[in-house]
Image (cartoon, rainbow, N blue to C red; front, side):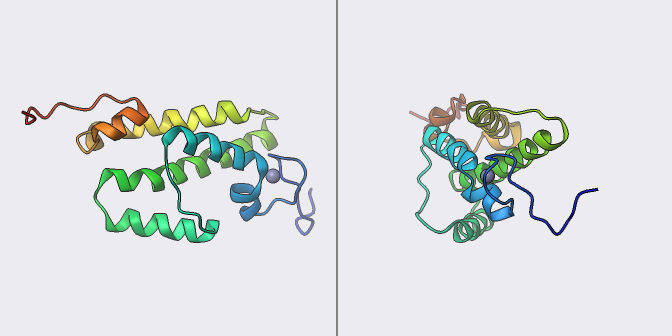
Length: 142
Ligand SMILES: [Zn+2]
C-alpha cells in the first residue's frame, strides 16, 4: 500500500504537502472557506497566529457561558470538521465540493447548533440577525 514515510499531497489544493497545519490553516482552499464563513458571520478574529487562535478560542469557550463568546469556538470546530470530511471524501469517494458549497454546509450546521432548543434562549438579537435565526421572545421587553 502507500508509503507512510512519504508525505502526501494535500487533497484540498493539490499543491502542498499535507500536514495538519497546512490542511486546516495554511491551505488556500481552507483559507477561502474561512474567509467566506467569517465574512458572513461578521466574526472579528484577533490577528494571531493560528495556533494562538486555537488557544484563544478554547480559553474563551471554557471561561464563558455567554453565547456570543461561544460562536467563535463553535465556528472553528465546525470548519475544522467539515474540512476534514472534505479531505476524506476526496480521498475515499473522489467527491469534490467547492469552497462555496463547503462554506454553506458550515453555515448551515452553525444555524442548526444555534437554533437548537438548549442554546436558543441564549441567542441575542444581534446573533439572531447575523445567523438568520429568530430569537425567542422573552416577553420582558417593555
Ligand atoms: Zn492544501
